[in-house]
Image (cartoon, rainbow, N blue to C red):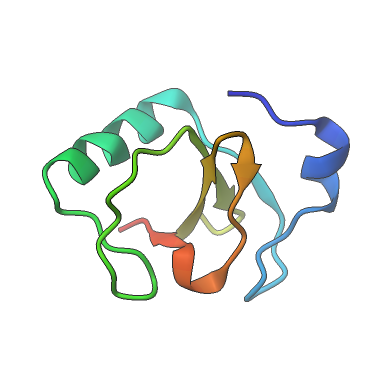
Length: 83
């Protein structure tokens, strides 16, 4: 998964305004495995049911925003807590 560097430079967490960076493949694979098991919830307290194509991690590494069909989903309730 790649994302345009200019787009990445202007994106930020909609909640805290922290910078975001592209998630590494092993993290996406781990999250997709949790999705397949029905164990992953988003910040809106809803189960994540669609596999991630990629993700953007907030600078404090506490939230990942999903990338689906090459589009970052930068909505607070769609963020995935990383604990």
